Length: 245
Ligand code: APR
Image 1 (tube, rainbow, N blue to C red):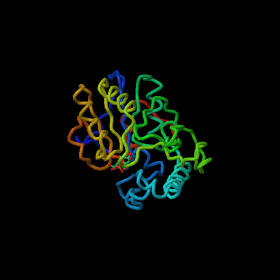
Image 2 (image 1 turned 60 degrees about the vertical axis):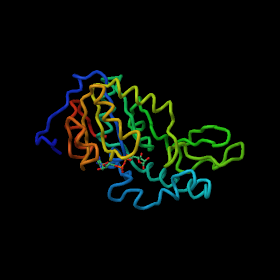
Image 3 (image 1 turned 120 degrees about the horizontal axis):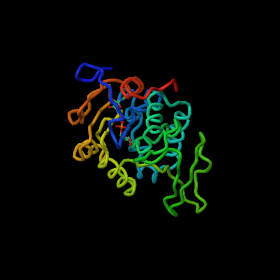
Image 4 (image 1 turned 180 degrees about the vertical axis):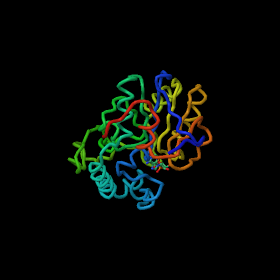
């Protein structure tokens, strides 16, 4: 729970103008949502080639939809933790703060965060690959597997091999370029373009902080590294207190 400098430095957010919290699967881990690559990670239990790419969907849409339904049911049993609460309160004091997340679980929004850029889409939205219709669908089971036009609906998330939404990437990139404080939480930093974000933030002159219990490929690029869990580090380090969530 200490920074790599061996002391528990705190970060006074009042010193910064634009703040970006960039989150990955580790942000949701203490809520009970498994990460992708760590111990017990989703990609150790499932082959993404069979459940998380367009080719798999074209071959067996029902199997892919059922996999995502299981994920929805698992996420619905999870609750945001104290670390999510810190980000909510930071935004209340600092309305220009942004969260850029790779997570599709919607936990930031469930905690109460408003300005959330979802890089990889959402588990709670479906889209029709034929007519382009999008539908919010938030229950444990999908209301329908098919669109009015008759095509299979697919989760509106970025699978392996998919292009990211250009407008979303442009918004994220602009936000990071303009920030003074960039805090990366719980991402292994191996997936692009997210892997390039700390460098982008640095190039724009931001102070860069990493929160992760494990070293990552990007750790050397940060000005300050906290080795610990999001739910413990965020309440301890950011000057805004987080009453139990
Ligand atoms: N607090 C903070 N970080 C944590 C915690 C925790 N409690 N628990 C684990 N971590 C860290 C791990 O050490 C790891 O570095 O979270 C990171 C999770 O890494 P990944 O599983 O690779 O998740 P992520 O980086 O979000 O993956 C990126 O890859 O499969 C795709 O689309 C999927 O959005 C995902 C993308």
